Image 1 (cartoon, rainbow, N blue to C red):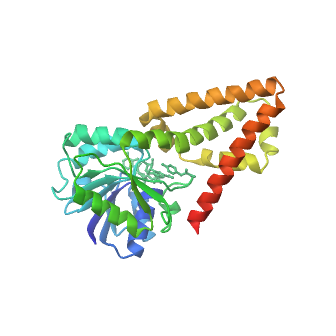
Image 2: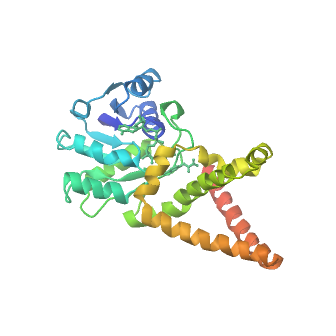
Image 3: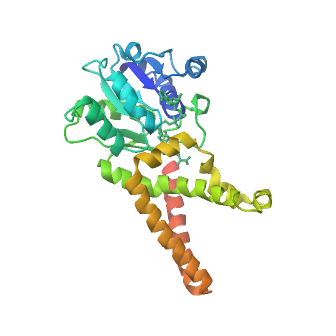
Length: 292
Ligand SMILES: NC(=O)C1=CN([C@@H]2O[C@H](COP(=O)(O)OP(=O)(O)OC[C@H]3O[C@@H](n4cnc5c(N)ncnc54)[C@H](O)[C@@H]3O)[C@@H](O)[C@H]2O)C=CC1
Ligand SMILES: O=C(O)C(=O)Cc1ccc(O)cc1
């Protein structure tokens, strides 16, 4: 049982965790903290948090668990505000989409041997943001990856794992670098591509006709281009090397598709598409098995 959980950034991710914990009675008090009193009051009205404070020092007093669920670019400033007031026995964790930058920022602000920080990332979400989008079952059967370091306190890891387990999530651990490479490929690249595709079409002279006659495939492919631009800007900026590496691989592959089309090489095109379809069908079948 968590005594007092403080959530910095009560949006989709922080709000959904709060709802799941409240539903399971796994937390005595949940306090929200950010800069926007209106959003926080809404979170209270929706029954997501018990109370809120705009003052980080007041919020974290007596806390035993503190979760950072703000855009990646806002993490450092928050860490600096929390540092002087975090109770010595409290656990600090986060839900950010990239792990290398927050791990480096915690080391800079709290010291390289700070053992009470457990980096985390729920691989669950949607293109909608804000507390209104929060739902209690967002994490059911979804992976939560923790990327602890050698010096991370085992007891702190166990408590963060227990917190996420209450939500129905499946816990895994992974090295920071591997996390950022894997997520660059499976999550960050697709989002960049969706934003880039819509941006490309917007710059075409026939854009109105293009959008008017777009079919379901366009809608499926670009759903994630409706995601929050602040969040995705920050993910791109904080996972630069890994994202650039997968963009380069993708550019190479797209160039090969262009060459095959130019050369009218139907057989090679078909082979590549068949291989990709097989892999994608298998992925979806696995995913659907997990859902059951
Ligand atoms: N949306 C998604 O599908 C997923 C997001 N994440 C990560 O979780 C974190 C939160 O994302 P969401 O909940 O989707 O965002 P959100 O926009 O729904 O919520 C973010 C919250 O942070 C607050 N906030 C923004 N800037 C702030 C600042 N400078 N200081 C204090 N509070 C601030 C906002 O008021 C809002 O309550 C991000 O780091 C994101 O990368 C992780 C997994 C999935
Ligand atoms: O909207 C979707 O399908 C997503 O892919 C959500 C998502 C966004 C960011 C993450 O770090 C993890 C999951």
